[in-house]
Length: 253
Image (tube, rainbow, N blue to C red; front, side, top):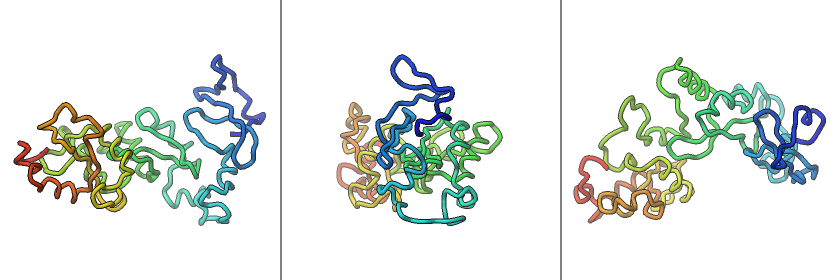
């Protein structure tokens, strides 16, 4: 946001040198990379642009120089509704107390959330957000959690489970802590380290290089984990010394 009279209303300077307006903390940035003017930025939603207009006009933007009108413009309110894209200002305050959220780096009006399984940032559908809100209010069936793909939904050990995680199937990541799994995926760029396929193409899983049953001390060590797709994960566990019956975990990890 640029420094202007409208933005100065209700703004106060705190002892740490930052600005507060309501519950939001702003920090002063020297210049926008497009227009060069100083601006105030949400401390926890960093951006190199002072405004939505500069975001769309920057040469680093994939939409730079592209003219779109009416329903073809994803930022047109009717177009957003047609495409099922949730707006940050509309839904952020309704789910921020339980979900990690942010603005889309290109389309600042769009809402982004983290996938429960792999931890990637993505833009859910408006319908998905509304179902999540209803679930949190106790008005819907299920939990309506956010998944970036059907593969992540199928792989998630808590999806569709009312009491216990999905159980006792080989080559699942049921034993991997969610935080560890997401850190490993992020480190490996969400790519299977054996076949090179991405999370958009296949279901990815977190594999322990040294089995948990043989080396429990390093079970939560990122260096002992690697990202594999479901197919490659099964192939690895067919190798000598890594078969399920050899690990003492026949019937599931």
